[in-house]
Structures are given as C-alpha cells and as structure tokens.
Length: 382
Image (cartoon, rainbow, N blue to C red; front, side):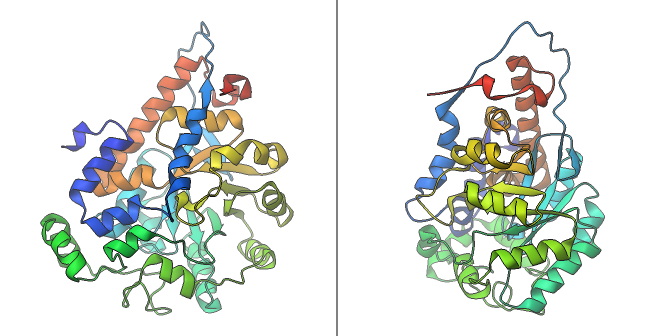
C-alpha cells in the first residue's frame, strides 16, 4: 500500500499500522477502558442526515472561517497532540509545514517533540499552544512565556487530564515515552526497521518544553497515563484557569469542555473559545461524544464564544454537520496523525487535501456557497 492509495481516514490508518511498531500504533489508535466513547465520537455523526438544496448555482465556494481571531482557509485545524516524533522523525515540523500550506491552524502540545521557537520559524501561519497545568509552577510559567515569546496566537488549556485515563492497550503493549526495549516491544521494533533506523539514528528524542524541569517522558520512560497522574496538578480549578487566562491576555480557550454549565463558566472567566472534546475517548470512557453535546452548548454560549467541535472527524460531511449545528470550526488529532505516521509531511498534506476536497464537493452538493449558509434546517435527526 502506498500514499497514493490513501483516499480516506481508514486508508491512512492501514498504512500507519503497516509502518509503525505495534506499541506506537496502538498508542495513537487506542483509547480508554472499552473504547466505547472513542467509537461513539464518529458514530454520532451517522445519527444525523444532511438535507441538500439544489439549483442554487454554486459556481464557487468559500470555506474560510475566523476562529479565535485567526483567519483559516478551511474550517478544520490540526489539534495539538503529543510525542509526534515517535510517529515520524519529522514530527511537528511536518505537521506545521502542512498546516501552513493549507492555510489552517496548527496546535502544538506542551508535550511536543519540537520546540515552539523552531515551529514558529518554519510555520508562519496561525498557531495554538496547548497548555498542560503541571504541579511545577515554574514549569507552568515557562510554558506560557515561551509560547508568548514565540508569538503563538492562541493559548488552549486542557482541562480533562487531571489524572490519566485507563488506556489498556498501552498497558498490554508496554508503550512508554521514550520507548524502551523489552521482550514485549523488541520484536515489533525489529520488524519495522525503517522506523527503528530513523528513531535511533536521528536527533535524540526529547520534549524540549519540559527539559530542565522534569525527567519523566524524556529521560525516564513512562506511559502518558502515568505522566498525567504524577506530573499534572489534580487540584486545578476554575480560579487557576481564570488566572492563566488573565496572564495570557489574548485569545484563550479551554480544551475538554463537555457540559453547558462549564461552557457558561468559560465565558464568565474571559475565554474566547472552547473545544467541545473528550480527549479522543482517551480519558473518561462512557462519556458523551462531542457532536452529541454540541447543540446544547452552541445554544447556550454560541453567540458569546467560539465553539469548536473536536473528535471523531473522518469526513467532510462530518465537518458540515458540526458547522450546521453551530460550531465555528472542527479539529482533530488522529485525522492527521495516521497520515503523519504513514508518510510524514506529504502524508499530512494528502490527508488535509482529501478533507478540503470533500468539504468543497459536499458544500456544492448541499447547495451552499458560504459556510454561513449552513444551519440546522439542513439536518434531520434519526
């Protein structure tokens, strides 16, 4: 299977599975407990049908949006994800360049494997920094100031990771960051020599935003769940979020909002955006899907704050359904991570190009020239 054979999300997933050692692939692919919420994140879109209008003379379409002050050429951006150089040796460099090429936003994790300063230089487009609230207050201050100095446009505080989710696939495969060789993993690494060669011969794996502050995840191998449970602050509160919002003093979002009550509180503390997200089903299994919660959250705060629907997006029709409900844009991680693992920057560009083409074609088939013409009138719930 080659990159040119990848026409959709499932194709990229298959190629990524072929290219990656088992522990690395299952880290991307897995979720919490029985993975019910992970599956529901996409299934939720299939419970709603689009109703097109015809004879509208759609000669051209405009799919641009403005989200948290950032003009994007398409209503989809690359959500922040950790550890990207585990999946491909170019990691965040590949994703940042691809996002810039497509005129969309790139989210960079606190647990990134390329520093914000380098990303800012190679990806001049809109950028979001995703903030993990650590017990180490000195590290928190350093993260914020580095993102500010690198001229990142948006700060997003992740609020659904005060402890690690039960990611049983990682327990079975022995996945850690950085990867460690043991009886479980050695065979998988050995049977993927291209990945192993790139990982072990290119620059040393690192998470530069944490260097000098913590050893876990960089010098000491731990699972992501262990990192969340040991290094992040479980006492994080609304007061902490409000203080961070004031410190940043710019476009500020909460990532991981799932209730109307929390959406309203985000408005109250001065946020300019929220990501309706359950962390890709990787935290609380049995929780609602973002799309299932989207309507009531948009009804409550959609006129006061930018609402982004994050998770489960695999098709252009999913994007149009979320925007019809009231989201300003959508975002996702796996939608580009499989492509990154499959082929680096060309893979991410192909994934984004596929989705852009789907959105444009689906807008034409829906009979809309501008995304603002979408509404719940276009939808029917089964």
